Image 1 (tube, rainbow, N blue to C red):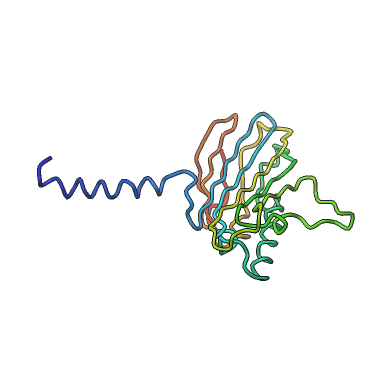
Image 2 (cartoon, helix red, strand yellow):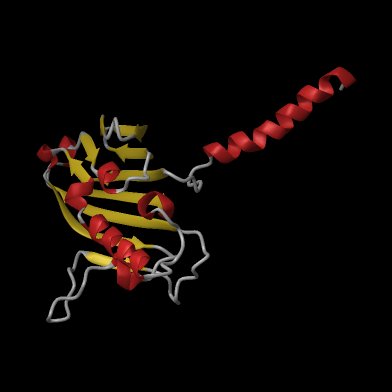
Length: 196
């Protein structure tokens, strides 16, 4: 390599790792989340993966009563699948179950409160930190929603209300795999829906 090309080579070598980190799937980027939409026959699975910061405004275990209440409200919001996701009505998709998990948050704050009889919704499964969450740990949240669709071939759109419920969320990258094909989409507060 000639000496005149060294600055260019050095610049390229420095910039390549930055580009790779930005584009890496599953990268922890504040304000951004990912959603995988997978339709296999009548079974639809939506998997939301997000830094806690985009959903809560912080990404550590709750340190005080106000943060514990924020985690409870987050759990309530995530359990409102019909508010988070609107699917093509013609597909007749019915929620069958959900799992919400975060290694940084206590599971008891994410799950539905028990009824007087000590029961929780059979749809609701929450997993949190196995031991008390470490207050300085940065974390993500994973929420999986499972549906049964009576007319899966009619599933052609998805709308989200997540931007209304989670003010720091600015973008959701969607990976879609259905019988009609695969695709990548981006949801934003100004474009909260996709069609295929």
